[in-house]
Length: 350
Image 1 (cartoon, rainbow, N blue to C red):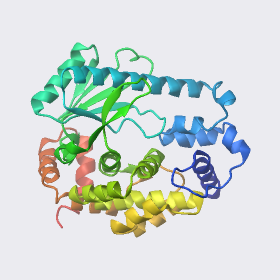
Image 2: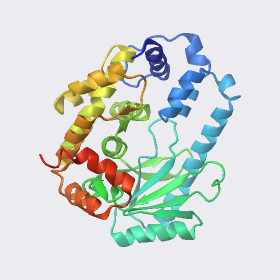
Image 3: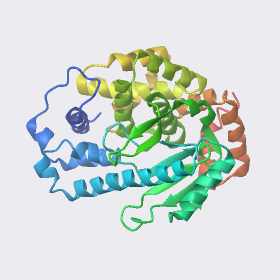
Image 4: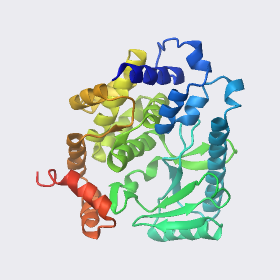
């Protein structure tokens, strides 16, 4: 990494800290308590703006318009989650909120809700949100999007209702294999909502990062550390089984290699939970070392060879393989298909 960019990245990681670091170095007071525009820029690009702003001294952050804006978005996010959860609970809907509630105070752009029941259950979820006044925006192969009716001109919060964990026609995780990993979480509003357990939520997060987004951001770095901190040994063993069953070993090796490198850069150590998990899944991906070392701060793109390895492994997953063929022959958008087919051109002939 360039020395200046690496310095900023390390300052950000150290200032925020790690729930798995036992030897966090002391950071200068000016980094811990004063607003640094460059650090905020990195945090915003990596979808952790509030995480960064929360380490600034209370007196200073309260005067920042950015802090007020992000707090407003997080508060409204929690309100909407409470509202739609209450609506679905009253109707006896089998659902789960996923990829939305972070294990630390941070908001996301979209609320993702997954139907765990039949397709009729999915149609009922869509109709419930229509009747409640949420604005219909779009409908895709397995997803219907609504907009928050109260703040549509301010924060543009969206609600994505999924019938499958997918991007367009491509189903990258089988929800039936995750239906037994649903638990409840209490929101700041006092409402209990249905979410995935830490191991299932981490699985979905990394699958989404590798297959749908093809990139790594710091939001996922912190999600990984926080969820691993919550897991005991049996939970981590359960996670390993889930990774193998869902054909995501290559995706996890890519993701955990970067996470380990960043933690090593910042704290001069790799947490035991993280290193053991990576080792049991086959160890680091060597090519990632060079990629991360040569780049500046994240986002990091998933390189072509790693992406090919991820998709080649996923082709062993029946529901993924069938949906991939469905995706290719339906061509929902030229841009999506061109990108997908270019990346898969070499792999599909192996």
